[in-house]
Length: 145
Image 1 (cartoon, one colour):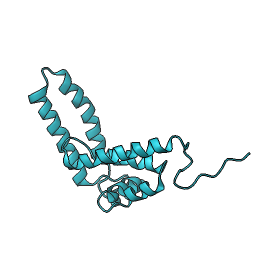
Image 2: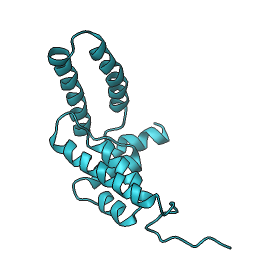
Image 3: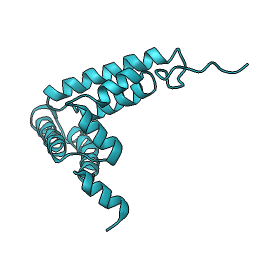
Image 4: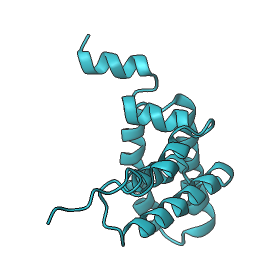
């Protein structure tokens, strides 16, 4: 017997997993919105995870997030061109630095915690800085000079 074709909203996902992915997606959207107002909490990674979850569970929610007037442009730039805008880079780097400074002066009792944080933040910051900041940069990088 052939499999029943699933609707486009389900994207070939196990029907039992679909509600889990929808809840997981909305949890990430909520965390992303919190990241807009709370320093130290990123926005884009949570929204990218939400987009992934919605792509596998709900076309309606995926399209809403992907086409959102404020959140959509950054998500589309990343998906289509792997571009991270300068403003997002600067905010991420400033937040990482502020978090590390806060931990060094107000939280850590020794060198282990700040060192561990720096060991995670430094490669992340290096990766972030090396991403293209504009679509033109990304396109030139693909085709060569």
